[in-house]
Image 1 (cartoon, each protein chain N blue to C red):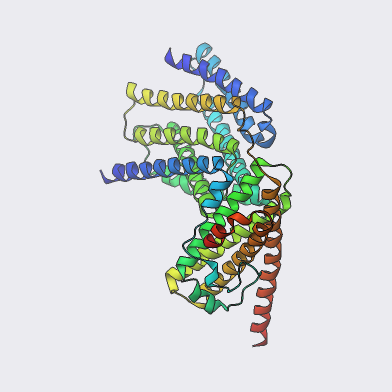
Image 2 (cartoon, rainbow over the protein chains, first blue to last red):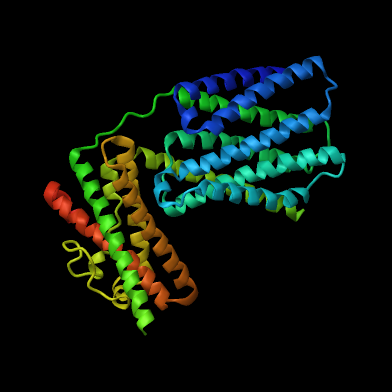
Length: 261
Length: 172
């Protein structure tokens, strides 16, 4: 009963988030995230019907849903990482997002055997693959968030509010699901096992509620930015260009000197 | 028994780091221009590297001299912190104005980031090999860019906000 109630609440929240993403035009900036929310809405609705009308639906259906869900999450992570690099994109080579995708993909491949180390013994081989995939993606999400946070901290890259809100919701859900999969490895199947899954579902609903609140709230009003401040930055920017040319010349002269020697 | 403990410790550390990082980004997005200026660190001055650094672009010291005068890693760290403030100024402008030239902002960001990368490389090299030639060259590259930017900032402040020049000079 609680499961169905939670699913229905989740469906409503997903529909509102999708609508708000469309209205605030975030869907244009972050299309993969928008598609992920739409996909979650469609798949949750589909599985609600399946559970109610066909309780003995084949397991392959859930596996297929899990694979598509994982692929969508992968796309969202790549999109978010690329979006965070927005302020410095001009200084990156073209197609850098492919490099990010490869990097996240390699991280996922490396985590796959790691996730296999702690599989519970009581699972069937079919359930093992399902559990392993969910564990790999739970760890991957947290690892990617850690990587993004560490990298942006190191280079002092700023995050726009919308990106931060999406990362916060997704990060919260990821951390709870990682904690749940960690506890699951030491648990036996039973009522408590299912409670933990409900906690994960509740955390997803929490993330959705947070997104609804965030996207429904107007962005903070712009602060005063005087022409003096603007001119200040324009001149600092032109200095940066001069410095870069000077730096290049310095390096060229140095290498020429080395060649002569 | 050890594996679960390691997992719990690692998990707690990750949650703590991500929570603190998120708080930092939120604070960063809501700070004012004045608080940004106030965050420029005054505990090492680029004056040590270049006699007329705030009034002229370019440096009049060799990499070896620059390394000595900037007091090694201490000066590098201050440059690293101040480059962060420059990046945050660029972010402030992006958030609060649509008229600022985006290309110039991107150049400023790229420059400040290069300073941070140079400093990090120099500090990492310093950690392994003390003040080798590679460390001094990286430190010199960072200092060259930093002094050039500081010089132009001072020129601008002279024109538009002469009152805050003493604070700025102390910080840079």
